[in-house]
Image (cartoon, rainbow, N blue to C red; front, side, top):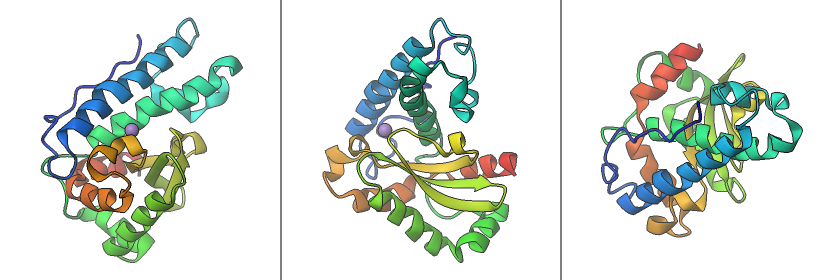
Length: 201
Ligand code: MN3
């Protein structure tokens, strides 16, 4: 079965004023849909057409070589945005608690240090990409990725990611990527991130 864009778990304007309604409409309905259409076209008539996208991305060498770039970019776009919508909430913000909070303190020193490092990674990502909180065998870390690459293709589990493509902020923040990231913290869905942490641990 072909992939489809999941419905947003909240209204388009629910993340206002931090993330504006028009950005959410274009980002979800147009950008995400385009990734889905293109990855579906690339995988049609291949043995991977029914494979969950995370399994495809975990090992891109299983994708026929002439389709691999299209799947890496557009399959990555589908996976990344699916995570992104889930990891935001109108009731978001604040700080995590429990095991995730302890793991963040132990990896980064404090929640504030973690926030500063994720923001720095996002601000300094040249061109389009993402900044991620990931879990691997050695614990939590922060990595950047270019374009629609995802750390899952490098054996790491993404827990939280911030989209720093201009399409995710330009309508409201223009060139002010740091301001967008500062605002985005107010909508981070920590209970959802904690669920991902627990299931990956
Ligand atoms: Mn995007």
